[in-house]
Length: 137
Image 1: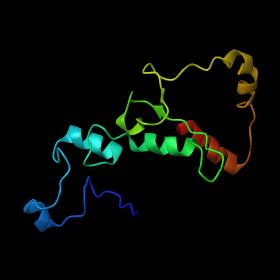
Image 2: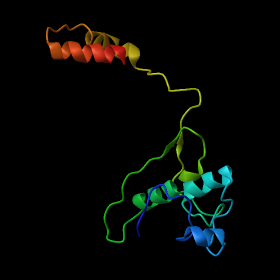
Image 3: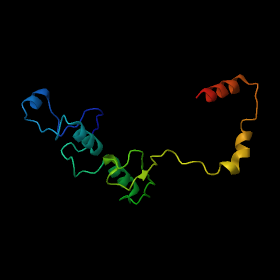
Image 4: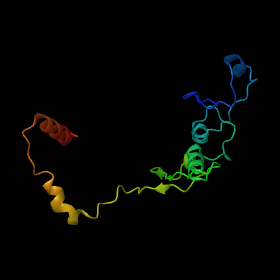
């Protein structure tokens, strides 16, 4: 099976003539943005509701037992956008907080070591360049 990126949601190969004469099967809701988002996330243009998400299916396949006996891969999924169709079908994704990143709670224990990292000075043009880039980033 070949994968061609950016082709859109085709149910089957088609031509311009077949599309206009309606002899080729078309995906549901072809020009409906919300339906096309679901179709793109599950990679089944003919199935808008029942198909699981492509990344969920991929994660499930990678984390499952292999017929050849190879050890499964350790997989994780993280979502910053809540439950996304693309992750359906695999393990439940970790939800990132909508309130932002969690605070680093070991700062006080490491504060002396962290502040020591910035105390060193160098006369190297390379170190100065890196420091300048880090400072402006």
